[in-house]
Amino acid sequence: MTERLEDIAVAMVARGKGILAADESTGTIKKRFDTIGLESTADNRRDYREMLFRTNEAMQDCISGVILFDETLRQSAADGTRLVDLITAAGAIPGIKVDKGAKPLPGFPGETVTEGLDGLNERLQEYHELGARFAKWRGVIAIGESTPTFGAIKANAHALARYAALCQANKIVPIVEPEVLMDGEPGTHSLERCEEVTTLVLNTVFDELADARVRLEGMILKPNMVIDGKNARNASVEAVAEATIRTLKRTVPSAVPGIAFLSGGQSDEEATAHLSAMNAGHDLPWNLTFSYGRALQAAAIKAWGGKKENVAAGQRAFSHRAKMNSLAACGDWRKDLEQAA
Ligand code: 5MM
Image (cartoon, protein in one colour):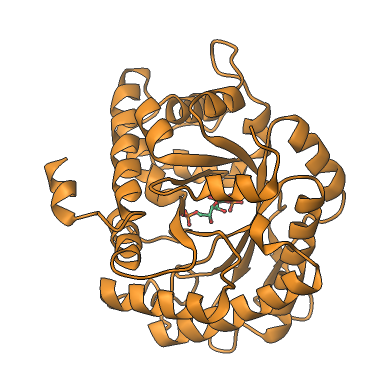
């Protein structure tokens, strides 16, 4: 595997491929397993992720990289093969979530800053030895009546830039994820308000990345789409696609090789339709693809249900979503393909 940051970044956004975000922390995967009545044990988490990573069709044709949680990077499949080796055998790149989560930001009621910079240099060295070639850090920005404040945006952008510089110093491509929440509370904001906040956030992030001397050619941006809040959703697919493209063109330098969206609580089909609309008929300076967690996995978890006899059904569900998003990354998805499946 190449060690050049630029080559890794380009491979992460190769045409028709995207990233599987399987980096749910212990608390989040428990919530996902609760929906199928499955206890969140280390073995169950391993079995679930092994099922995904052994889905050859999806992994080989549609997935460029997988974001893992610390535990998964160290785990082996039931037959003793390291999960990381399953991923690389499929031709995908293993990555690692390195942030320690969003914590209350003192002096800024209701706002958070993502922590995890202490000891990060050493952790990155170990992660590289364990096989990770990219990393992910997520800053969280919620839209409320009097939030976000510039102070909180700046604190998150600064942490993202420090993280990105540390990754590059350790030959690891940083995924820079500043998420403006769609599904925060109260979730009633308009598309226009999301565009205004996302513009400020991305401008601030790229200012901080420049100050930290982060090499743009060796990073991937993972933003939210510009979309109205979960309790006010009525913008059309075209409106979301247009506002997102407009915002990205205004804020993201063309030296960045690729942009891989988070799904943020959109339905599986919405996330796919939006990505496809952005890729169809737009002349863009960067590759636009997916780095979905929920929108790639929800159907697979449900079909699997935690039962051995359902592994093939879970893999079929994962393959289908991966294929739909792969088509969307080329602007070629159509609704009737969902029904046909
Ligand atoms: C896979 O979900 C991740 C959850 O992380 P935490 O458990 O630490 O909250 C999340 O960071 C994910 O990688 C992205 O936000 C994209 O996920 P969605 O579901 O929004 O596509």
